[in-house]
Length: 196
Image (tube, rainbow, N blue to C red; front, side):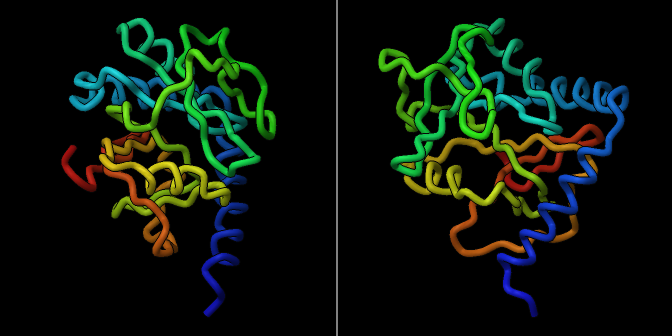
């Protein structure tokens, strides 16, 4: 059997290519359905502080979700990659204009010490990923940043992934340190792994 890491690398390539191939008009419809499902979640409605992420390349567009949460008066935080310490630093934003091109060109919050937030303050975390399975298995980008962030939290808030239906696999190869998500929202359905 091939080692898990090489299996993950092959899957990353395969699913990213599949995701890249979704036509723009189809993607727009899917993004809208995912946004509507996300903001209808009871866990979203209850949450005061959210850790969201700014989408990159062919990921589900998270801009509508970010704007919706800001309009709802929620405290919206986004991650900034701290390469020196191999961790994510969290900063809250007042609007999309508070983002700049960061690590690998990913939109990240401007580094402002007065806006830095502790991960423990989050009531809900939206998780990025390349692929997911119905048991909450997640294939990330390989940096382990989210696994370390969540692994270091005393109280784990609900973890909600957003993905296109094309990113849902029967089984993701997971290792012991890999964090599973609680809910996956796709353009077609809500997959509840654990009640949140």
